[in-house]
Image (cartoon, rainbow, N blue to C red; front, side, top):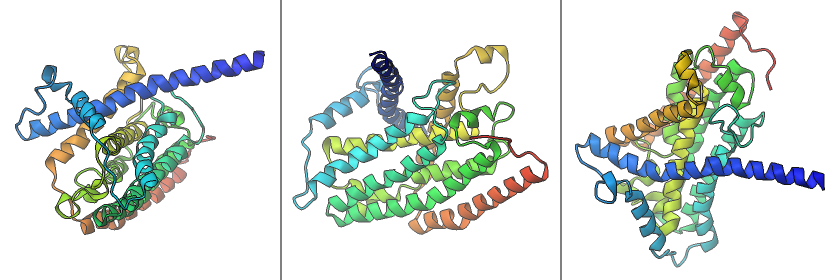
Length: 338
């Protein structure tokens, strides 16, 4: 009986951590759509949402009500089961990846030793939701958008993987908590600045964000893999994209910006909870996501592939070799590790 009570206690504790992390995450995903419209409006000298609620803050709520109340339309010749599963997979994977993300010291759902491999596996699986959507829609526009997205995500995952390998060489552990604590003296963004740039640009391509939003090229593909979707199924793809943006910004914060660590060792900074610093750094990176969309035009697909295979892949591979050589020559390789 005691054993069962202990199990129930542990289960309840894990569920509580999931609720504490997931509910704020969902709210952030929803209001990130509002922030994006405000940032783009400011870049274009417009007001943006300003009618529904104070300063337009209830606009995402109004959009959600509208999408929930709309009828879901299914193409007559579509594979309906796969058609419905695709957005569910895309959205759920973006949320599931947060299971191992430490937002503060000790505040993580599961602090596993191979956390970075879990993140990489989840991000690799996300392409299946898009491929399923393109195939199940039975539309040439949707299928071409899905193929573009698959090729794009696979191409830039190679660069992201090599960037992560560079960080892991410096840390000697696959644990995300260890990666953050290894940056107590200096954040990795300074010695590995080129890799930070490669990671961030690759994250834009990985999440199909401008200027790499070729899968949704409206001038040639209408809306790409989203063409046949409507109502809440469309909203789940939409929210999945924004959840993926937050995830990649959080990963960049952990890998290069010291995670929840304060920027300086001042007493007042150290009194501030670590989750505040993590949220601040992630928010700044999200702002750059939005800023880039408001600033740069869309790339051509051949330019997108050339950057990934002819620029980022050789550069990241060179940096892995150079970092390894530097650490070996100066006897700076981390001792131990997971």
